[in-house]
Length: 321
Image (cartoon, rainbow, N blue to C red; front, top):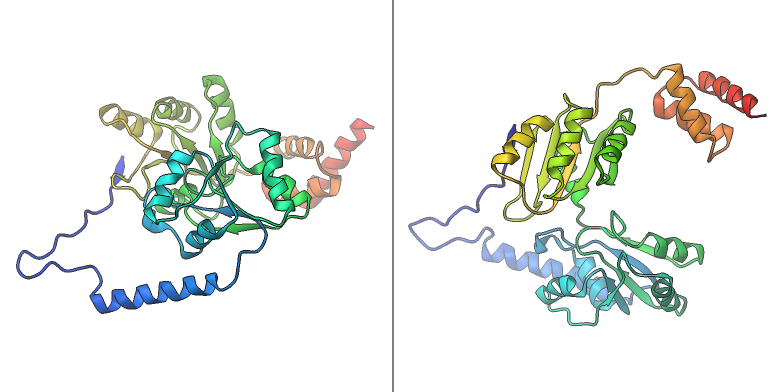
């Protein structure tokens, strides 16, 4: 198992004055540039619409100028937990009212936000950390806003998924985010088995209390694949551990991981899809899309000839008629 920790901050020289990372002249120039960018944003009021605002996942310094502007100037700001988000607003001296929108918010809460959007208000939505809607509430709100013609603005920023992926050393050209694995052992095994043919890195969120069971399931389904466990990303105790599921489980018995976890599984070796694989994929696809779309999606996804997929799709349609 390999384990990476961020380097400690270098200490100033014992001799002479303590030195900043950036000299005073350059720091002043950077601050002036930041101020100019903020002034450009502040010259024009926010457009009406729903702003999906990404916030830091640990290190508050990762916040962007545009995020600060939107949070300070939106007509309303909704968050999952006002106590949690208040820390972020206090850190940047943004004193304003915060309202809640979370997993337990109902249709009436959603309608109240939509009413504000219908009135031409600017509404910002944030999660406790990272990008809203990614394993966080907001999908139904965005869906309804889009259906009513309300403009939705992404305000990008930190994402635990992408941060873990790019720092893991696992393939990044294709990946699949599966949210949280099921809690029950059988369902967890089934979920992992169903993803066997995914041609990319598998990415999940996990918790310290469930990581042992998750690794046990991965060892059963993918015993030879490389696994990465990234925790406390961008924070003081950030670590990324890699190895097989068995290796990691053994290491965590000695030093259990704490904090927020991103779990990644390397893709398996490419195996040519069989006719049965193609037929099963087509049967599933034809339940929701047209024959043409199913053939297109399956041939691309499994890397098989369109003609083969088309002939099998006709066969399946013929059976149904």
